[in-house]
Amino acid sequence: MTLLKNPRVRFGLIAGLAIALVVTLLLTLGEGLFGGRQPSQIDPIEIPVTSIEIVGAGNVLLGSTVQYGVIVGPDNATNTAVTWQIFSRGGEATIDAFGSLEAQAAGAITLRATAESGLFVEKQIAILTTAIHVSAVTIEGPAHFTHGERETYSLNITPADATYSNVVWRIQSGQGRIDANGRLAAKAGGPLTIGVRVDGVEATFTVEVAPYEGPTSNVKVLLNRVDLRNTILRDYKTEFEALYPMYRVTFETLLDYENNARMRLSGNDYGDVLLIPSSVRAQNLPFYFAPIGPLESLETSWRYVGQKAYEGLVYGLPTYGNVNGILYNKHVFETAGVDTLPATPEAFLQAMAMIRDHYAEHPDFIAPYYTNKSDGWPLDQWQGNISGVSGDPNYYYNVLPADRQAFAPGNPHYTVYKLLYDLVDQGLIEADPSTTNWERSKIEFVKGNIGAMVLGSWGVSQFVDAAIAVRDGTFVYDDGTPADDQSDLANPAHVGYMPFPYTHPDGSIYSVHAPDFFMGIARNTKNVAGANDFLMWFLRESGYYMLTGGIPPRTDMPFPPVIQAFQDLGVELFEEYPASGTMIGKLELVEMESDLILWNPDWKNRLFEDAFYGRRSFSEVAQGLNDDWNFGIDRVFD
Image (cartoon, rainbow, N blue to C red; front, side, top):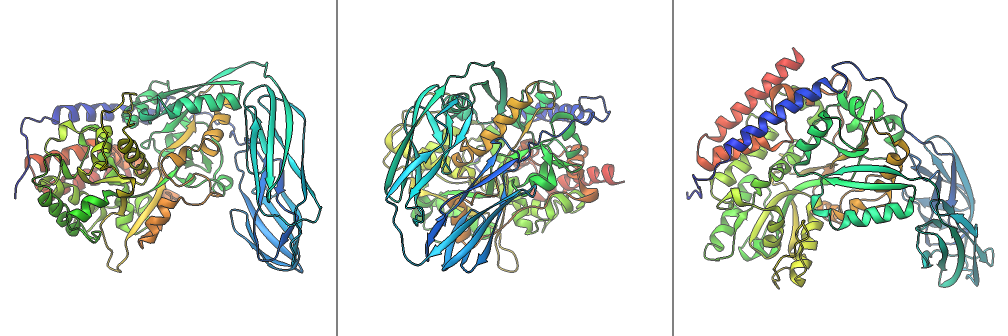
């Protein structure tokens, strides 16, 4: 076995300093901002639904599929989810959770949309056997409103009993945004013309928008996407301030977000809206974040919220969800003769060895598996595969905190991290891990110089975009510097995504779909209204989740194509159950007491170095981790 090792590379000092910092921060967070006292209770920010309207045709053709929508007011209501129901009055139809209605038998039906609060609205619909075509359309609604407000525009269809299914709204001229339900928001004062096409018949309507002349306030937002600070986040700032002229938003992006955000929390300097560090335990959420609303209400509208709830209140909403697995270059795999995606750790190691051997004489090839170690956080991506390897949605939050064999052979942590250890130990990674670079790795991956990386599914869209940019010679680093790279080898079709290679005894491969960061509102914000308006806009309207191909945070939005493709491989997806009963907050406590923060790269760095320098066998590493974990269990449960 050939080990690619460089004894001049030194990681230990940096890792040791990081550990000391993390421990100090965790102790500070344990005290909270109130010196160990419970924080005073503040009212949830939750904004209730006060109105609901169904948007869509009153007459539909038998056999057609027609999309219906709802306009829920106010626009910043916390829980906008509705439940659809159909009541037959002679006709028959079905409707899915996303408002897509299929007309199955002629006659009348009643369509009902019910909000979580119980408020509901109904619409009477006739299912006809003969199409009645639209001959004319007019738009109805206010001719005047003020910038910063939103108004709804409806359709007057001729003839009144016309059957139609295709309605497309647009901005004809001026600055504004109109959604699929005819809800209009201006982006500036002045004339604004909207247009609509109904089954090919068009209409326009001009609105005079008065400029906003009221006061403005500031909203500060902390995010982790340093790579977006000079591009997408600038666009977000422009868009949000155009739609909400009463606010001025400032984005601050943090490198090593998890550790730096914890430092900001401990210093009581963390803006108005921020991503919640994953290590903040449930019991400490009320110290730092404002309650958004009751869990019982919000879990019908937002995915994963049980993971950021305490004593029945939700303190954070998900930015998006991921599945977990491995990004791989299809062309590299195929060229090296890897024709079947590996389904076991042993098969994955064999595939990496085949790639190494095939590309041994290729001067530009970097590694079968690329660790991105020097950036730190990429090692944390391995942790996302623990629940999938367990195959148990209850494992992570309700079993693991008290599992005295957590790192023992046959258990998920042992299986996952042994593969990482073996990749390093067998020389299947980059030659010098101290010089890895995340942004550069995108370029090398899409050029075919890297075989695979463990990443959440959020990475797929970044690498597809990178392939297009490298192919076209337009790749730009996250600091705004253009990359001097152009390669015809870069092909977005070569970006593949596979499940973590572990097959259960029943023959199944599982993967968990789980949230990325949650976003919360700072408890100490002086701008609650602005923070809430930004939070709701960012999660509902900005399209942030689409940047990653991620699972949308709202339950009324379907899974994206990348997740569907993952399922097409036969992967069984499930969602983790949040901690319940006496297990609430226990995982974070065991992590703190054991000095083993699962989503922190420090201990993974030590594991990496043990393999890289041949200092300890994996059995020794795993035994040490298991001892640390059990120390935490003893401190928390005894």
